[in-house]
Length: 112
Image (tube, rainbow, N blue to C red; front, side, top):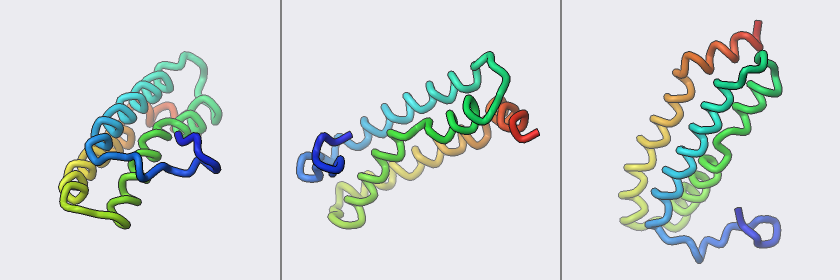
């Protein structure tokens, strides 16, 4: 996250080739967070399941929001090409969470 006032994003220092590694790293960390959530031996409750899920992957959102902000406001051929990679990676990440049976079981226990 930025050290600038109000955590402003230093767009002028971001290079296109930094996005894909940043996204992959953020997704890797998010998956670790989800694994820890699933492996939590405590009985599922709102805090250790729903809130933990909601706050997992914040860096994925941060990286993708910066990328798409630049893509829409200051696009170029390289950014458009990268967008073709970003979309499927984010879609796979989302599907991995949505279709995770063990995670669903924890959420269902909280719901029930």
